[in-house]
Length: 78
Image 1: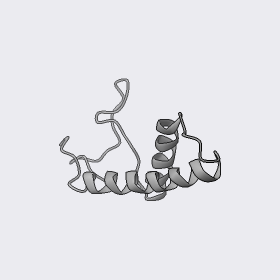
Image 2: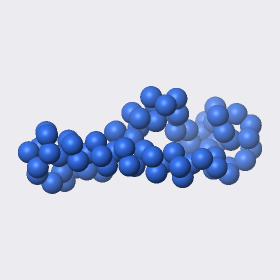
Image 3: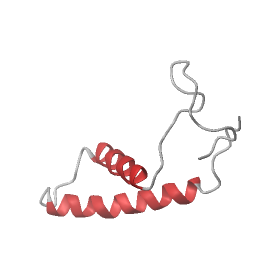
């Protein structure tokens, strides 16, 4: 099993971060009245997790968790 990242990983993550940054700016202005969001890491994580799922991605630990086998196919990519 390969643990090499998908060559598109940086592009995918950069796109997610840019979308999250834009959406978070709107959230701070609209929902928080322009107040700095101290909980921004949690907000970003939730937003990016949702965006990944909507794009059909699933974060799966290599080798599974707690000794469980991973459901990632041989080769390590989906």
